[in-house]
Structures are given as C-alpha cells and as structure tokens.
Image 1 (spheres, rainbow, N blue to C red):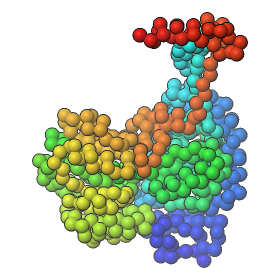
Image 2 (cartoon, rainbow, N blue to C red; image 1 turned 135 degrees about the vertical axis):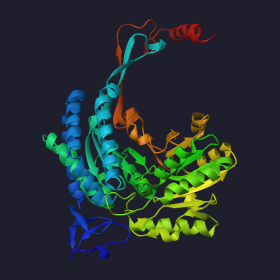
Image 3 (cartoon, rainbow, N blue to C red; image 1 turned 90 degrees about the vertical axis):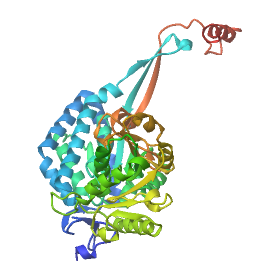
Length: 506
C-alpha cells in the first residue's frame, strides 16, 4: 500500500513507495501530492553506472574543447527552449514561486554559456618560465580531466546548486554521475535527458536516484572526484566515505552569511538587499543572509526600512507568492527551536514570531537584540528568519562576523569603506553594496572556508577543480653546467653557486 501524504516521514518530502523497496516517491511540499516515483538505485546499479561512465569519459575527452563546446552550447539552447516546463517541475518539487524557478534556470544557462566558452582558455596547455637553473628546458602546464565525477546535489536549488559542478566537470572533459536530492530528483532527470538527446553516443551525464545510502555508494564506486552540496553533518560522512578510497572531494555546506551596514550606506538599497537575501527561496539557499550588523547611528532608520519590506511578504503555494514552503518539515522544528531560544534569551520580535510557523510555511521573522551565543546566530537556520544586531563600530562588526565557524558569503554596505571592510572578512564570497550576487556572476568561483567547506565551483577555479594538473619539461639542448648527474665533475656545484650568487646574492 502506498504511503499517503500524512503517513510520510516528518523530516522528508520523499519516502519509500509502500512495500516496494526499489522505488521511492517525491512529493510537492505545498500539497503533499505525489510528483514522481523514482528508482532507489542499488549498490550494484551505482557501481555499474560508474563503470559505464569510464569509457564515456575517455570518449568525451577525446572530442576536444571545440567538440565539447559545440555540444554544451546545443544543450544550453535546448534547455532554454524548455525553460517553462523545467520551471514548472522545479515549482512542483520545491514549492518555490514560478519566477524564482525561472531565475534559477537563467543562472544555470549563464554559467553553462561561460564554462563552455572559457574552458579551453583556462585549461589548455601553456608555457611557463623555467628559471635560471633550467635554461636548456622548455616547460608547460596543462589541465586534464580527472575522469568520472560524482555530484551529490541539494534540494533548495535543485538546478543551480548541482549544475555548478556538473557544468564545470563536463566542460573540463569529464563524465558525470549525478545523484540529486531525494526531494527533487525529477529536475536532475529532466536536465540529463535533454543532454542525452544531444549526446546519445555514450552515457556522459547519468542520473542515479536514491537516498543517503545511494550517495554513500557513489562515494565508493570508483569515481575520480566527488562534489557535494548539503548540510555539514552529511558532508562529514561524505568525507569519511571518500577517505577510505582517497577520493578527493569538493564540499559546499552553506554558511551563516552576514551583512555589515556602515553609517554612510545607502540604507534603502541595504534594506532591500537584506530582505531579499534573507527571505528569497524561503531562506533555504546556501548563501541566504541570516544576520545583519548595523552601526548604531543608522540602525533605527535601517530597521524601519527592513520592517516595512518584510511585513509585505507572504508565503504561499501559488506561483506568484513571495516565497514558498520550507521543503523539509523537520527544518521547521529547527527554526522553531532557534526562535524560541532567542526569545527566551531576551530577543525582540520585530516581524513575526512563533505564530509565524505554519508548516510547511514560515512567514518572515525579523529578530532584534539577539545574544551572540544564541543558536540563531551560531548555527544555520535555513528558513526566512533574519537577525539584526546593533554595533558601535565596524571593527566590532568584522570581529563578530569572523567569529563564526562558517565562512561562505558576506556583504558590506558602505559608500566609502566597502572594499576595505570586505578585505578583512573571513568568507569565500563577498558582495559590496549588494547581497546574494556572487553566484550570478559566472566568472567568479563560489566556495567557503571553515565549516562552510572547501574547493570551488564556477569560474576558472571551478573548471580547474575538476581537472588534474600536468607539468612537463622538455630538454632543448646541453646545459652550460650539468649538476644533475652522478658523473658531474668536482667543483661543478661550486661553479653553479658562484653563478647564482652573481644573480641573486647581492
């Protein structure tokens, strides 16, 4: 007997389909209606898919940069032609507003265009200087594909989040096995099907569906690299699984992103960005804004502007709502716990409160005067809740931002000191006088420090992340002084030292 919406696990929008353990069901988080039924891949199936991807990777690499670019460009055009169908599917699996789904897909297409266009320039063989000791050699460095990349995706942005690693890997010449979140498998399948129609020769991009066990199987199936996006606890397990086979990993775990507002900031723009950064996608993006530090002398005006904007927002299931549901019911309880603790510690609710939590929806919540040791300021919230705290100066704000164990994104609003402040922040992606814009610029890498993970996707660094570096030297003639032989004459190294001293020793 199939499970009904009310019978499904409280912490997931996907569940086994009754007694059939080879299948699971994904649900619309707004209504509980079934969106799709998907294969729960077995360990043997995962290993078989990876094995099939290995010759596909060699074939894809041999196409060269031009061959791959032509196919990636056609994929981009095909996806644009299906943008409405894909956006509708994203809405069904995530519950987010239709325009947010369209925007997510446009970001994917822009990144796909940039990676296909720039892969050759970033990764092709190039000459490098040999130095004074190797003047009779020519040296080159190039970036070759690692082989098969396993990508484990997240649910909140089911197209944009995993496609960073997918696109970088494909542009660099790798095959990809994508394991999407069990909450949003249909989006990944649709993206891969469009690719397969244009590249039917080999399984260059394959999707395997399943749960956390499926992801663990992928880590041990012989892939050459893993890219993971998700929560820190799951990331730790991925790192443990990959350590057993010494498989390298790119990890993006989200953060506790902060905004700093200076006394000379454009307060209207800062308030607009704060509300968008915190509330869009129901606060579930990895780079969602969760805390603001504003200088005392402009705090009242800034807080008033944020309140006006936040109060206008309404969650809902209709395509035109401001924000959709919190996808995982269990996350609503995390939000409830953080909010209740902050209130008990003396925080003041400017907008919303405990009554704002109406699963699966959470109305916008804005808190003031929250103690810095409160979990709402130390742990990810992944919901539409924003903390605003006053600070006496920017030095204090920088110290508080950098005290977090997370370091993915941050933003600074200042007319005169924006770049100076940004340089002092411990974060991987920083915006000056805007918020949430790093991921939209395809040439910029995205990744964090500390508990936010390591490695990068997107931009030139993202392309190189999914390639192995190869260095080559070629001898072009006899050296003037050959010290690299057991047959060297007595005094050869001393002569070499004298020559080097003439060049560097004074």
